Amino acid sequence: MSSYWLPVLTAFGWGMAAAYALEALWRLRARRKRPWPFLCLALTCAGLAMALGNFELGIRNYEGGEVPHFVSHLTEPSVPGTLSVPVIRNYELGIRNYEGGEATPGASPITDFASPITTSPTRLSIPRLDINRPVVAVPLVDGVWDVADLGGDVGLLATTGQHPGDDLAMVLAGHMTFADGRLLFTGAFAELQYATYGTEIVVEMGAETAVYQVSEIRRLAPDDVDDLYLADGDSILLITCTDWNDSTGLYANRLLVRATRIKSGSLGIQGVDRQ
View 1 (cartoon, rainbow, N blue to C red):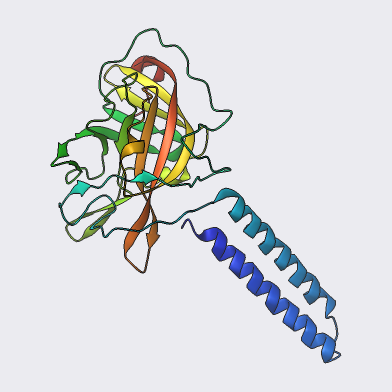
View 2: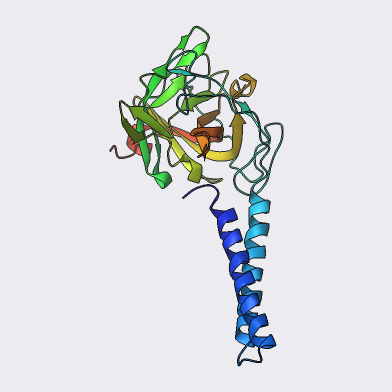
């Protein structure tokens, strides 16, 4: 479902309220029977529309930015098949808008881990969202990340963290949709937009696995890279595109999900079924 479904339902509710109110007014002026049920329906629709509008305002605080022209949601026309890195905007899906990289209160605290993990990720899964994809390396080519061959996999961006406990957080990118010839396919992170606080993410590194918990969800705009270099090796950042714009035929923004490591273990304990 589109991320704009709440405004659509709100507008529909106000429209129905207006229609019922006009019917009640017409029946009252024409001295026809039973105007009051229509008046009650109008008030009910207005109340629902107001509630939806307030809910929409409570969970979304979007701050727009200039949208560059992209060939696809992760590519830039000047360098085919490359990723232009976005910057965090003041936007948060869920309940609140946090500025400056604050973690959501109530997220699970980081625990002490007995031994460091030095192996790079090989697979990422989010069971609640039915995401289970291999992780491949995304190299830096001429100053941009080359995602020409990413397809339906998840890409670990070079120059960011390469394993849990590194100096920097790992940044994992995935398409929302991607084109192959004339066909359009669903990307690895098509369901990432439905992540919520507390959603668990499992990252496999050979025989080891690390479990993360979502602590922050934000929008991104493609004009800065600084916030992707997060000095926290016990966090990971997942990035994809969002907010499809029918008028431009482009994804207007990027979605950033930050998750904090809550436990590590062997694959035999924390492993997940492969698809």
